[in-house]
Image 1: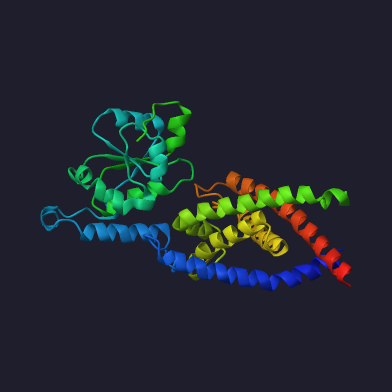
Image 2: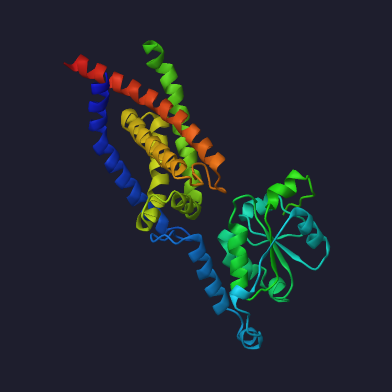
Amino acid sequence: MFKRFLYTAREDLPGFVVLALASLCIGLLLNQFRAKPLPLAYLTKEARMKESVEKLASVAPLEARETTPAKPPESAVEIQHITLDQFRLFAEDGESLILDARPEIFHRLGHIPGALALPRDEFESYYQKHRDALEKNKARRLVIYCQGGSCEDSDLVSKALVRLGYTQIAIFTDGWNAWVAERLPEERS
Amino acid sequence: MRRLLNNKWVVIVLRLLVGGIFIYAGALKLQAPQAFADSIATFQLLPVELIGIVAIALPILEIITGLALVVGLFQRRASFAALIMALVFGLALGSALFRGLEVDCGCFGSGAPSVWKTWNSLGRDLILFATILWIYNAQVTHHSASLAVEI
């Protein structure tokens, strides 16, 4: 029975290869019609963020580029990692801007009250959307969160913001999971 | 036992179930190709040059396989394709666990990776693999019976 199984599997293998190649051709064709085609050369999340930051820095209004004071070296900016209690203090003091680094759909389904969506995977477009609010005062404290645990989105967004010249950045490490676990209020878009 | 394994209606129900799962999984990946490419990258198995190609081809392969299983066309070949995919997924997940990696399987949309999620994905994949093996075995038996009749 096993021999019969192997014999049939060997018969089916070429068909699988043809199907895989056909899938690749269809996939490549469909990819061309996407609003944002996936590049064949894979770029890591960090590399994509770096590209977004470079594009954003290059489209800053000329007056802003001329009048903005020289930004401190990135290594001089210390990113704070804060607990839920510290986060609640910052959220209530009215001086901090809360940023949600999770994918936009999660933000829409529920976010910390007052948080602006700045998803890591759509950083460039959402930064442009919130540019005025963000660049009004680059020394204002920005507090970023994502899902929590091993989520790296808040880390990547914070580094991008440092590259864009922001100096007061904190990451709420335990993120949305911790907020929801305490049954704290949520907002929906 | 053999009669249960080859019962026509059991195989049909399982074929529809597996076909539906593959269509669903493929459609989710097709909607977010960049996120799927990021999931593939977390496995640290493929060279960078192949990640984009796999992220583009695999969802289509899943959808075509799923449709063939649901509609009942080329059932044996479709279940073989599903078997190969489930086997490769399982080996990739097993390899990630062996190397102590936290991966996001990306099987049904992408999310934050974790060891628990990786084990969970492997468990799901083993069940899926066993189910597809059942379906494929039924097809092989049917195919052999047809050949025997012809002879």
